[in-house]
Every structure is written in structure tokens, then in C-alpha cells.
Image (tube, rainbow, N blue to C red):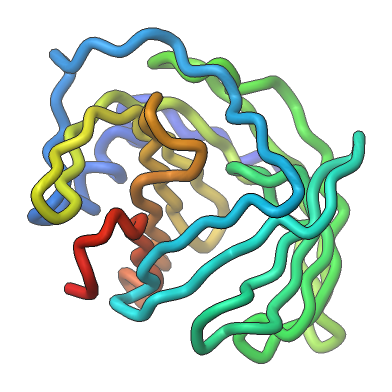
Length: 203
């Protein structure tokens, strides 16, 4: 498997291409290093996916990771397993019409978050129709101010790239869950935009 190596400057450029009205990247934002949030069974994450409300629930926890289920929204019934956070799922079922498995080998550790930390994942997977092999490289690319409703929140931006997509997570010290997540496909453009529900309503 050929490793995809992307220079830091290119990752920053990819992140900049995803700028929209509620994200302002600002290298002057001062944040302490951010430890990995401690998720527990029963924790829920309410967010808007492309404008539609969903709720994700932690249904199990083990030394090998977590199990999740979307319990509210049009994708309700979708289940997944994995390490969570930026790590690719190792198993999923009934998720936007897809079910499949992946083997994931992690290298490095991006936690605690601070600008410049990196990790990567070697991935091999199948959904019963297609198979794939890729590497996802992740870096804490910088800091950003993210506006959600009337609140503007300082965050770390984590950018992950693989052969087909660029994903960005925005994490705040005040929340267990990402404030924002985007997935931009190389050919199709923005395909997913999640924003945490802080009572702002659908946009």
C-alpha cells in the first residue's frame, strides 16, 4: 500500500478551500493543549447534518473503542463501531444505504490536540460491492473561531486527507463533541456539513 504523504503547507491550503461564513481561521487564537474527551455509554451528540437534525448516541464502550447509533433524524438506525473521534469506523450498518467493514491500523497519536500534532490510519475495507485501500493522514492544522448561532467559539481544526476526500473537525475545550465537521470530496465538493446543536435551530 502506497502511503499518501501531504506536506503541511498543502494541508493548510486544503483547509482554506473549505472556508465558509461561520469559520474564521486565526493563528492568534490561544488554546491550551486539548485532551481527548472522555465519552461514556449514553452520551449523546445533537447536531445538524446538512441542515437536518440528528442525534448520535454512544451505545457501548470497551478497550477497543465505541459503538454508536444515530437515534434521531433521517439516518436513525445507522450503527457504527470504532475508536471514534477522527478514526475511521471498523464496522457500520444501514448508514445512508451502506453497510461494511474496514481494518484500520493507527500510527501516531494526535491527542492531546495542539497545532502540528499528527496521526495516520492505514485502511482496507469493503461494503460487499467495492473494496478499497488507502491512508488517511491527519494533522492539527491550526486554530479557528467557529460561529454557531449567537456564539463564537475558539477551536482547534483537525484536517484529515485520503485518496478521495478532505475531512475537517473543529474541537473546543468546552465540548466533548466537535463543534463542526465537514467532508469535501475531491470530485463532488462539499458532501457533508455537521454543526453542533447549541439551540440555534436549523440554518
